Image (cartoon, rainbow, N blue to C red; front, top):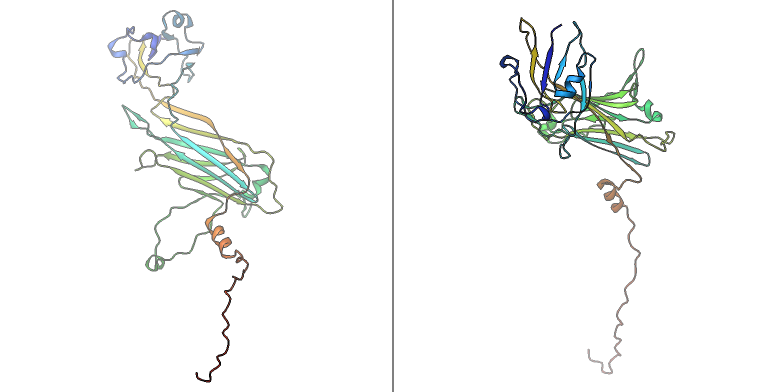
Length: 316
């Protein structure tokens, strides 16, 4: 088997690379990284890496394998490519779960703005509320899916008159993608193919809204799972900013070289749980003001009237 030498943007090898002109990959190195806690496949010569920081290996024949694992220390000011803020309010028999997703602008020199793809956000649901998300079908039970609500356009006669009937509130509403309960995760899973969408820019907020009106027979659990799992991928990027700068192959026939970058993100976001009586809405405040009793009547003191005595003369 031929010997292969892989060169990456290792900070300790900066300025010390000696490779052939045909082995250099035409890529832009945006950042030099420091590799820590490196773990290699058995085909890698670890002594060569420990002495010279060179990744040299004898690859197995016709096999897909994992070459190495390592850790880096990212800067503290680096923001997440997908940001989530979730709030759950439990007030008496009303439950509301709201999630706001924001994708900040992430740009690379080669590909420009890079979107987030295959987004999966899992909101945990207590087991005693699972039946609320089940729908009976002809031969089995299915999961209740979300409704996409876009405010604005009203068609037909209502547009001419200017009046519209209020829409019924759905159990789950999303502004992008689709959400439904999945028993494998015991959570409501919100799946979005891509963010930002086609034609949208960065910093466009997306909304997830779940409303539950519990009955007197429904239980309210004493504790809730406050961890929300977030998973997504980003093409043409790496979380560690690793760049393959060169690939050297000791072979008479030069092979074709191609590097495909893709990053998979997995992290957890803490849920802001608020339990207690919710403040009254504007409609409740107006109804309370209309039905408020009038203050008790208090008679005001009257001024004394002057009494005149009859005159002695008969003349008026």
